[in-house]
Length: 60
Image (cartoon, rainbow, N blue to C red; front, top):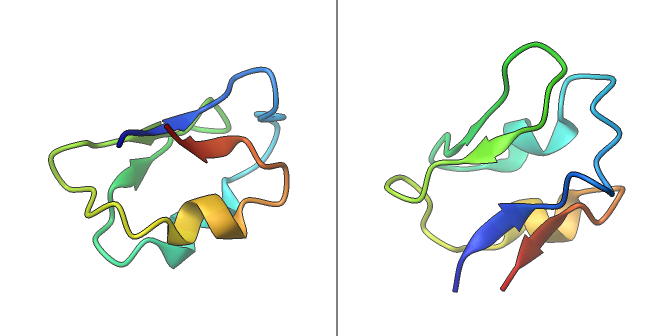
């Protein structure tokens, strides 16, 4: 499983609210750009997937 961010669903106009729910700090964002998931840190807990209000963070 891989956690990804769908650029078509993410508005990219604010600080990603899902960053604060990641227990290992695997979500990074430069400015208000598209957040990225660090696969090396990600523990696949899917907290960000469940939290994302735009459903842009997905587990595939």
